[in-house]
Length: 88
Image (tube, rainbow, N blue to C red; front, side, top):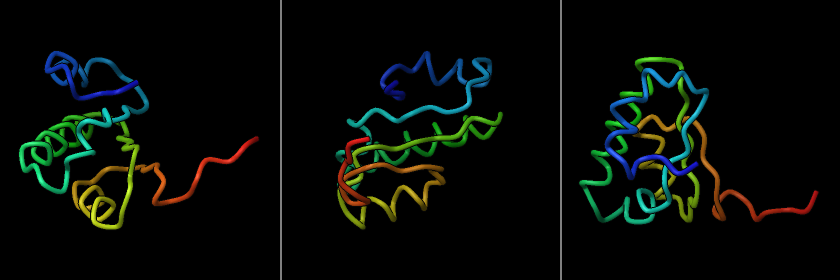
């Protein structure tokens, strides 16, 4: 469910043939202040692009975070900035 904390998972991503990966919230929580997290997200997105895997980022809390994720090529975002959860 939360991708990006295990380097082995990144190395195996092209062989997994999954539809999507959801970034671990620890990657996005410090995105604005931590260049290393941005580079790691770049690597995950680039690796996902070797196949047809889409990348999802959750816990998007503000416009700056949204802009950074869009600039990195993240396909889908979720979070409080976009709307509060609703009951079904």
